[in-house]
Length: 640
Image 1 (tube, one colour):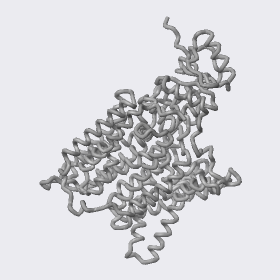
Image 2: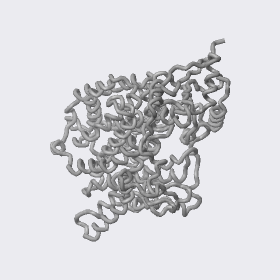
Image 3: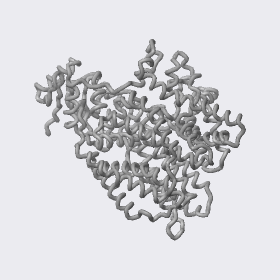
Image 4: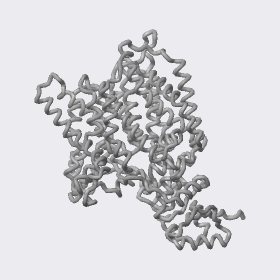
């Protein structure tokens, strides 16, 4: 396997983890009086600040390694100093200090993580293994290029919310993990923290009803993915989300979206932001008893939203709009000061976030507007209604009932739900089905609202038949979400392999593991990672190109299904395809397209003949040999 190219000295940054926690604890203490909430939000706030600091330092220096050391030191040292200096400044109620974590929360988080662990550890989800995907981006960051570039057109910065991939690269640096292992670790940690944050959200919104209803219904609730139009597909394939209404795919339950890795990082950050936003009613107090100014809450909230823009841009857009509405609608004695603070925070967030790159990176190869108006999802109103019912199932009526069950926080949750559905129905992303992510945001809000309605039914004062009805509704609502990870766990077992492979989980969509490169290719990848410069492409035979992308983070010449999703102009894509398929003799054409490196493994005879001619003409040179694999560098043209 390809060795980790990051310096081993990065592991010393493990000593800074207590300082990162102290930074999160200090930020949390600016907002919360509840000591348990302060402790629970500290990891999320600390990691959000750490991620943002590493990203900013990486942008300034152009180096991931320098950014990692500088950003970590900045947050850890600053957090330690601030926490040590300000410890005890906020007054906590004695009753709050004695509160302990409920064993039910701890055990349910462990059980929920065990439920999805087989899927996370045993399978490669969604865009992990694409040439332009999460493993390749994480590997590219390891190569010390920052910010990462588009893996097919490296003249452009990567236009994507790659906060998750940055976190995974940071994990490989500190823990010396392989890229796939780091991705699994960050995914499971994000899932577990999301579960715990939703539980704590339930304690704040359920009004005495069971708090566990919120994570259970939100993460596992889903629609009826059994009545779809692709009737030839097996029950297993429908369970894992391969279900269509007409030619439009259904949205799977939120548990599936956690494996679309921007949500792995984005959901915890978004839930931290919601917790902070909802703490306006319980403002921290100074020793003199005077409420602290709301500026501190808005400063922490702004930090979370800016970090969220790097992690999951759909969540960033939806939550920023919903939080603004919630603050404007809410009325209390501090309304005027709050609205001033809100305006300042919004201006700062909207000014800073687009300058961070990521999804907002400017691409010289982009073509036209990315978002266009749509007129429904399917070709009929009946099809649109079917999509909504089959995607959300009982979350729709339960969420509507929960909106009216309690007044608290209804505007934030209601606007997220309604706004998410409206965006999916009314807008289109020109290059992919990614607009459906707003449907996942609607499911998040509907799950929290629906837990309120079920909580009313499950109150102990209710008649037995109502409580029984609530249990049945809950079981039906979460069946799709439970079936999703169960299908992958069963698929790993000997009895989970069907006699007809068409009836099981399609491994072309959900591969079991990343392909392992042959030893000669592995050696070539390791050598190229140390020599390929930012903006340069590597020509590899199509059969081997995935090795060099996902394990080496090396930009590739071939066009895969992901390229169009980044808005690259069709003319640029067509020109690249003509170049790599025609293999022109003129080396200037290759250099003009940033293609400098060639891997010759004798599988393309025409390529081998071309490289030999170039070597004889002194315009190319064999730089390394590894068994049957040769690495050839195309030399730059001499200056006139």
